[in-house]
Length: 208
Image (cartoon, rainbow, N blue to C red):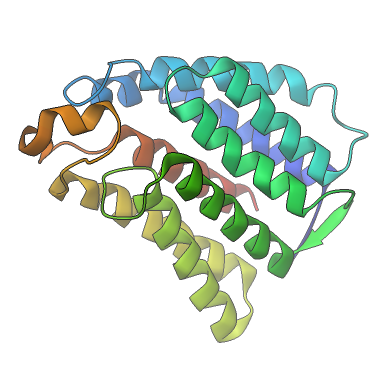
């Protein structure tokens, strides 16, 4: 599988539309454990991303991803903007000046992006954050890809792992962000950040 700028922009449009569509659901998830605004903030950010994408058709893959990240940093409130912004910007830095990438290059960039999220948020898996969807997805994709080099199967494995990871956050006690304030009362509630990450990965898998 190879991806060029045109396909990347199509995937980012689809991700944006999905996050905007899930605005109310993500906000509902945030109500008992956060600021009741995750869906609102993420929707606002991806509306801005869609506007930016209209100007990026002639740019390389790295620039498209970095611009997406910078847009999220500047428009998404709370911690989600800097964290998702870091994910896309780190990927963009890794893929700078490329007009087409292989699946191996995508995996390398995705892993670097996830590492950036962990460093920016000073967090790891098991803390009821977006990493609880991102990391399992990355690991599942790498395992599936190494097994048979089937990009479609690897993406589907990543999407499934992200869904399982997001669901698993119901069992976790948050140690980061606003959700950490509620302690054990957060058990039973799915993390909105892990859920928005799951939507992004699932949508990307469907598109790619």
